[in-house]
Image 1 (cartoon, helix red, strand yellow):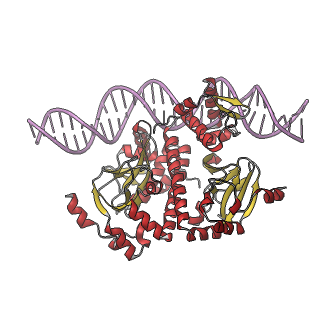
Image 2 (image 1 turned 45 degrees about the vertical axis):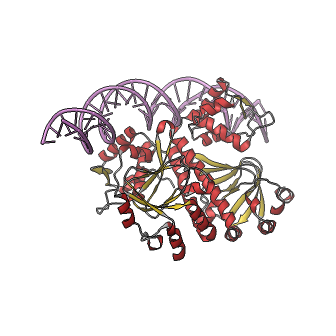
Image 3 (image 1 turned 90 degrees about the vertical axis):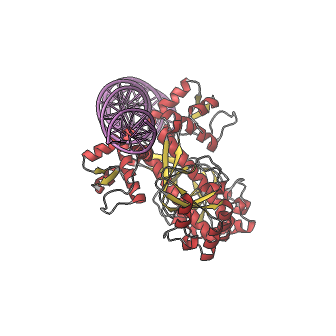
Length: 238
Length: 238
DNA sequence: CGTCAGCTTGATTACTTTCAATTGTTGTGG
DNA sequence: CCACAACAATTGAAAGTAATCAAGCTGACG
């Protein structure tokens, strides 16, 4: 089944319909070159695309679906460090430093990715100064977010972090048609991993927010009833 | 006084004696070009080189001294996100993204820096693909550290973070001749900012470590009596 | 219908912060 | 040189927050 899907779903890079795609600044020829040796993969929800510590063979460009990037801490506790959605690339950082992957990438729903080999990617980077610049900007942005995240975890309460996490989920997954329901189903445990807390605390906090009519639930999904309150409660001080 | 010192202390880039310097991969001609328009500055201990939120005019290359990079959190609580020492560059990230500086850079002792303007730097980056690669690697490393730091803050106890901080100080500042005394004087408050805790907790933890003969004090400086124990207590799980 | 995993809840414990008071240090002007 | 002000460091006590532990509960699924 996987193989069929692969061939059907993902077009060549020069015909990729993802707008706002990381590689979109490349010329058609370059995109074709990118396509030549790329391999396409399908991952079911929950499957790992690569593991922290694995040696890096290439980078993955997310064609569709969402990916979470997480690191393992003490006693196996997971911390989600970033998300990636269609058009984003993951696993590229390890390529430059000759390091293993620094995080585990997991499919959050059905995910189609293209894998571009290390050699091909580095070749393209070398030939395209503008492309390097794009990479630098990407890294800068990720670094800025990581540092902000650091500050949040260091100084905010669980409640604030949970609200902040809701806002993160909003930017990554967006809303369903009602513009209120977050378009993602997360386990409480995953919610805890995002907010850097325990499942129990995450639950208690979400329930309290529900009591206060700030959020509501629809099955496993979360409805943001009072977006303003979420923002306030997230304690955005800048 | 500042002006005299400036002219005496810092040579042109092509004659810079800092080994392991960020710009050292440039050719002599390029270094000369770098020098042409650079301005040199002296900052006394405690002075700010730039502030978080200021618009970015250029990057700073640390010629001598140590610099701390910190961000302000809720209610003015400071969090140290990184250090820079001679040969390192700071403030470069904002240049690529047309953003203000994302952190405040403060001189930790007497610091001499060269300021390279935004335009000149971007020009050099454009002309040197290899240089971009170096930047990418720098950013990758910083990002890796930031993510590790995030995990530490999220999952470790104060004691572990304090021990970890001691190890960070070791790598940045090194030891005095006795190979035991950390070559840096920090206030308790700064120590707290590094370990992401309060001054009170930092003090209590350091005193407990002293009781346990793991560290000792020599004036304001810290002596690592039992380095192995510090490493163990830092809870390095990877 | 039983089972298993994830969710929820309550009670307890541990850790850390906060607040307040005290001590120590440093620099300054008389 | 001393007194004093200002600030940093320390200490103790109290409060608060969140993690942990230990049950029950629920719902999906064979």
